Length: 206
Image (cartoon, rainbow, N blue to C red; front, side, top):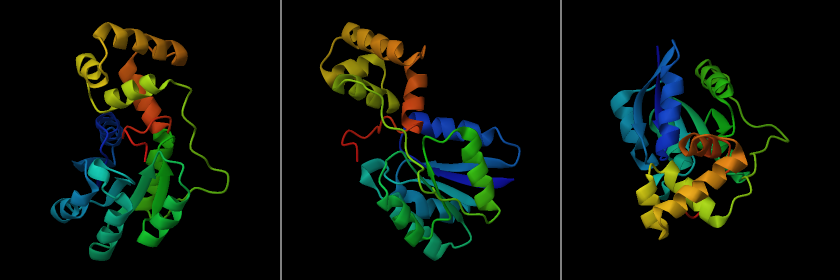
């Protein structure tokens, strides 16, 4: 049984990754952190076989820098860097940090598991020429803000307060989002939006 550490700050995505990995017979999640600054210490404590690390995490912590620290001190741990951001320099930075593989969050679970297993078996995977992150869907700024807040685990009342809207306004906007996308649940769409690179949950979009 291979042990996997997840470094990811978006609650819904953390849960989705954990469920996918724990649903496999050959791997399980043994640790989760929202902040890449905690990754090295968690690796020391849990000794994972592989760490799945987001590029930008809580408090702007740098996942690639964390990967370099882990590779320097604990070289037997495999590293997979993941991101939803279409920033080509991340790929070169991940290579220089010693990460074994790099994956975009628009990948489906089958590809993610394939990359994890391949990396565990010593086969690194990096995007090739022409591989791209899917661009965000066409939403208003308010709709994007709602999706971000849902990604952060906020309920309708909390979303309304954060955006200075009424709950009925939020409900109407959510209905509009679902009508555009064909989803029947805003939380399901939020997971989809994040994993497919349409939305970055951080307000700055960095």
